Length: 126
Image (cartoon, rainbow, N blue to C red; front, side, top):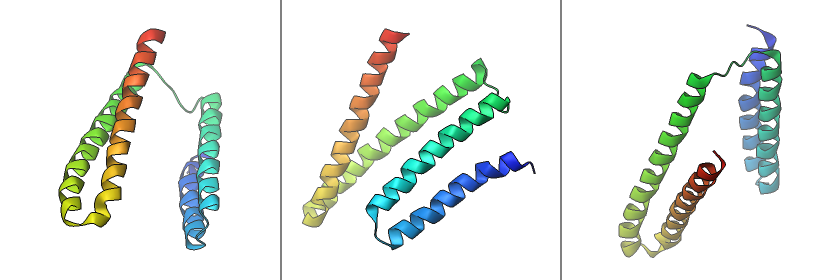
């Protein structure tokens, strides 16, 4: 296997290991730092691969990525909706779940507003 392909596997493995270490140390700042560094390294790695010509992007692959993103967002909103319903029912019996219920509602509203905002933005830009 080529060395540059091993880097693609090393980034998530190293990130997972460092996250486990940070969470066992109960250091939230370090965990967020690991995630931020992993995102930066992933973007730099993808940019490097594009410059090398390893990533070829055409209309078909862009369309596949658009469909995958759309379906992922639809599944996320649907899962959040079911979670809100379940937590609503369970929080009536167990009041300690009330904060999880409000968190799920907040996330569902946030994702929905983000989707509508991005849809409006791209309708204007394109």
